[in-house]
Length: 375
Image (cartoon, rainbow, N blue to C red; front, side, top):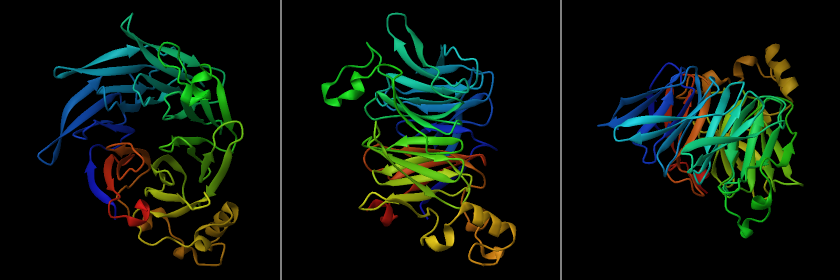
């Protein structure tokens, strides 16, 4: 297996983030606090507790270069935390929201961050040097429901979002005075703030976990209907495809290379998806398995599979006892995995990453010996 280490930190973890050197990890144990642990002599010790939010913290991101932590919470606020001497000092960011802040992520250049909310709004936050505070610009009236995840394009301008309205959207976040015009980037730096670049209506259910590939040419996100969606040539004429799987829905995804994706969710076991030479995506295997499960036994109509399990037989007439379930596969997580984070340099190939879930565990994964994933 690709498991490198398993650490039990709490009864439940809603989100986590790593310092640049991976010597410290910040996590939320499903309350209004952020706990920061440091690795000391092969043991994780709690060294800081960040207390400022009034309700459950829904998102954490730790900037690699500036060493700042940004948090979002159901209390409708966001804080930027700076380490001054030996103390984390919070700076309140006025988001102007009337519903919970649900997710947050730093931009690649770390001069902005995006907050998704239950107010059908995205907040793009940046630092004003003259006034010495963080301000936010809002993208309103674009979503029909809560924004569940955000993901920055490598160009630092485009932002992808998913929502419980079943759609994935890409917006421009160009802010004059913060982002520089770049003629090489073409349309990305020419677009106006809040401009809708593309809206993808591929899912009939809630959507989560949107991510860009390392080059920014491919977009992936998941639906609550046990489907994962891949979109190439994001723009006026995108090329989209989806992969249906029989198991429980995913919650988050990560590109480990340009043509390989790890998906995590309610099945408690990371799933590997890959694109062939023609660019066709398919499910490969569970990360904890060496042998891929045959497509004939795993795929088919969701309706017929559900009926087969209900009546004690699969679509192909196999006894229901032979139908694999997530509990019988054997995995290090015992509850839904809701977060997957790359470790180290976020280049063209990611070899190490971490996952956290509702079981309170953070698991470190290493793909060094997974040759089929490194090809």
